[in-house]
Image (cartoon, rainbow, N blue to C red; front, side, top):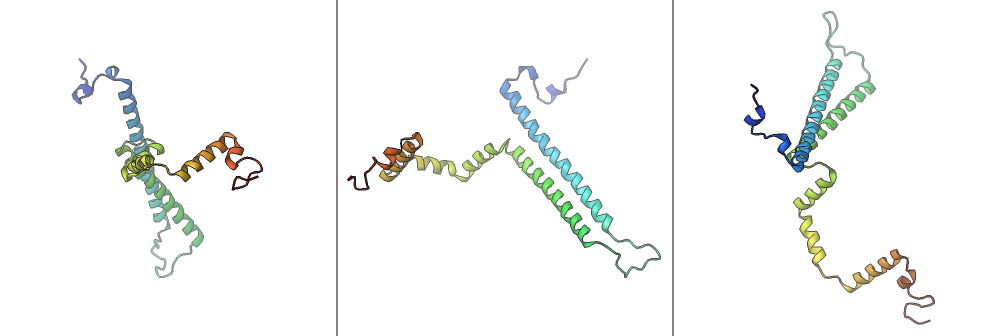
Length: 168
């Protein structure tokens, strides 16, 4: 007798799911895996930084003077600090971004820009701009650019030999 934990947890038979549901589940799994990957990278980066800080700490032995600082290299200390800080910053930013994308169900940059446009009200502003009537100068410029792109240069600049007043 086998016990099905999927039924206990409320999951159905995967063969009965539609393609859309399977794609959605795969997408959410990929977002989760990305977040956990960055979380692991952040943990490893923090351990590396911690070891780097502990390694530079000065612990005098029993017979050493504790009022005399040890010899050290400013360049190597600065290089170590910058590299550890950069590693931690990149890993943490990746974890924060992938976590936010997982929470808001965003998979790529195009989807992010679309959601931000809706969130900041740019979608309504764009619709309002498209609904506004076009003035005469804008129509003229649009027609000139269209004819220029089509390769009809004579209609853009007028006929040959004509000046601005239309006289020859």
